[in-house]
Amino acid sequence: MITFAELVPTARRKAVPPEVLPEFNRVLHPNRVPRGRSTHHRRVGPEHKRLVAAGIVLDVTEREVEAHGEVHHLTPKECRLLEVLMEHAGQTLTREFLMREVWETTFTGDMRTLEVHISWLRAKIEVDRSNPTMIQTVRKVGYRFVGPGEGE
Image (cartoon, rainbow, N blue to C red; front, side, top):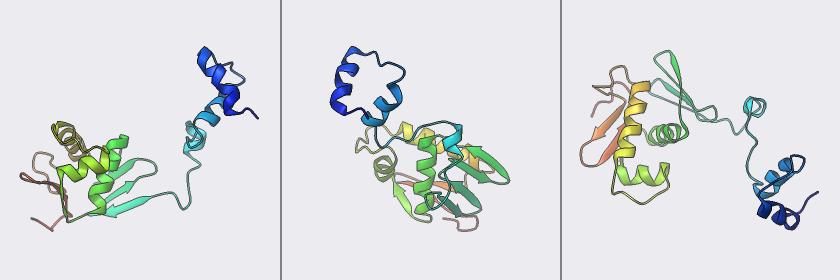
């Protein structure tokens, strides 16, 4: 087993021998899960998270959303944003709260990132994205996730 102290000189050389690379990454990043198709399909069990609200099924683990019979893959931020909205269904969430929960920042100077991600989500889950019924804008406050028939 290679120790962290043994890896530091290797890292400083910026040339990690191929036989050391897996151990190097494991020591430097102990909480990181290896990526790849084989590990992707093994994620089942208690950590598999799915949310269902308003006819929308969000598979957080796989980062997929099923809406109106169609399945869409989500980016990590789209998935986290939809997860937060669905966990607080029916509640108006401020832009500041969403920025803090999704982007882990308190900077609220430019909300364009949030608006763009909301637009992308609407394109994937709304029947008519120009007249959204699921992710509603609450003017000068933020956004609200509502089910069909809940209205304003």
